Length: 95
Image (cartoon, rainbow, N blue to C red; front, side, top):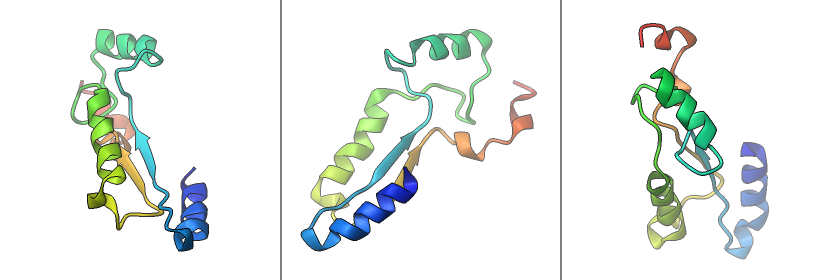
């Protein structure tokens, strides 16, 4: 997805089309409900913020990218995961 975002951004930039990607972590949605329940029951959160993301937190970055404030962003992947990617496997041992 990252590479496709970059390729499309390059190809469509001359047409004034910006292409970006939002890479969310675990977010409280209907589709993720079983996983959210499992994580909350276990208390072992997959990120250092130790909580589940909310849909409005993903909507915020989408609104930014759709607005004139995000007009200079293209070909980027915006990771919104509560720090999940910075967690090492043993970071959750003491939870």
